[in-house]
Image (tube, rainbow, N blue to C red; front, side, top):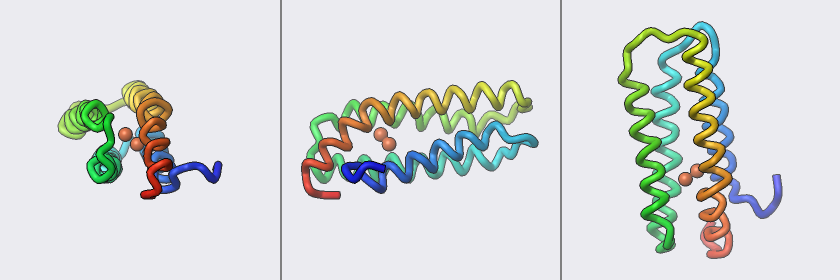
Length: 120
Ligand SMILES: [Fe+2]
Ligand SMILES: [Fe+2]
């Protein structure tokens, strides 16, 4: 890990990627979706609290992106249909792609802003 990383953010992203990976595990454990939703909420809320505290100019667009992911996760948690390994795989891939783009995109910009602000 580079010393210039925002440690809490980086650690939480790794936990999110691990949870998303567990969706692929057979037999499927539906609990994992709830755990993912709760942890994502914890993570998004923390990022958003920093944005508010620091008057981050990109806050609105960033919160919108989080909200779309929140909705995606809620509908996954609420869907009661049967799951099979193909679905598990595609769900997990979809989520990890989304998270990767988010982490490398607007999360990086936000990280830079926080690191320059001296509030870590
Ligand atoms: Fe993030
Ligand atoms: Fe974010």
